[in-house]
Image (tube, rainbow over all chains, first blue to last red; front, side, top):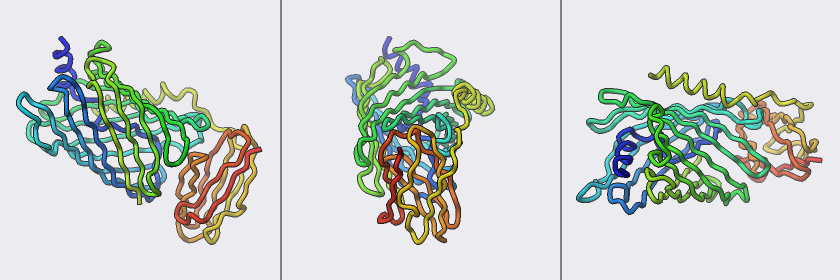
Length: 240
Length: 111
């Protein structure tokens, strides 16, 4: 039964192109090189050692628009071994900051992306997110509400959805401890049970390694059957 | 289907934002950037209120107003102004600096 659940989730795709909770902030004139990755750990062979990496270059076009071009490569377990790394998608991301930070009770933003397939028999997908941020003194909370729709021949007709949440304590510029929660409810119209959805939660830490290098590293525990037992996630950014 | 995606986003914003309301703007406070220095180097604002600060860059080159204490990071183009919204703050001293000229620093004192 559990395997059937995994199949449903994997067939319907993920609501998230990458494991990063986005703050609704754009920094004008700033270039960014970014590496994002996940590594899954699970006793089931078909869910263990799944790896996905994103390499991106981004630019703050103005004070409310950040755009990014990204390559996605991944490896998946099979019955015999793990597949070699393969370039699966090229993505164009756009983040729009809808108001100056602090002007409203919530800081709002929108994220729109298109993933173009780089391999045969794959489909493209549009992804949209609502980005919300709220600071309470030294505690920053960010919520992303995601929608994901495949396009092209053979595309799934359903729209996937998910939410991701990050809370962090701004202890110092170099170390901000916190946690993240990720829920991929897969196809919105299916209204899957809790264990058919992917739920993950775990500790994370954020900060600057230097003036130009930012990090975001965490370990997420799977708290539903559909999620891997554990997942290491990271984002490394070089800003200039 | 793309239309439906956009509708979801717009509806989501409508659902999530009823609490949004415009800040009660205080009398504007101004920090001038000239010769890569902040003038005045110390600005006093009322504690417990949302405050609007104008950062007026009178240099021809861009500068970034950055503060970890205030969680703000905003670029000001040369000979342009930006508005920075901060607070409500607890009484205390909050540092900021110029990211492109990191020797240039200032403080905001909330009383």
